[in-house]
Length: 119
Image (cartoon, rainbow, N blue to C red; front, side, top):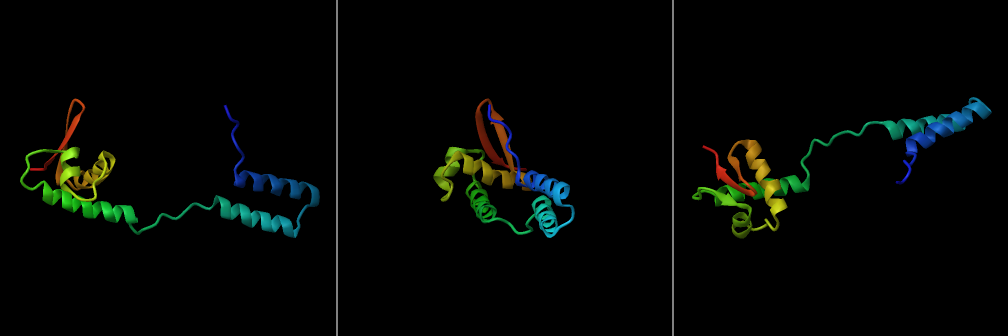
């Protein structure tokens, strides 16, 4: 099993302690402290939707329209009738949007998964 690697933030903390013990206060210490603050600053979440999310939402609308007259559909049926759905994983991601909106219900019978319009 591989040993746990040191992170950059931990390496900068170590360097700060070494500089503090050997030289006291100096310009290098100030630079290292700024570097440590940058490395440990939490990331800001983006408010905009990703390209994949935008694409999945448009595919979700196509799926919803295609399901109009169907009682229940499978992933395979959706891949055959909706352009852009090329794998069962993509179908699952797209249908999750409709399930979260409450427009579609996921049905599971054994290993078989199907989707139907919510009532």
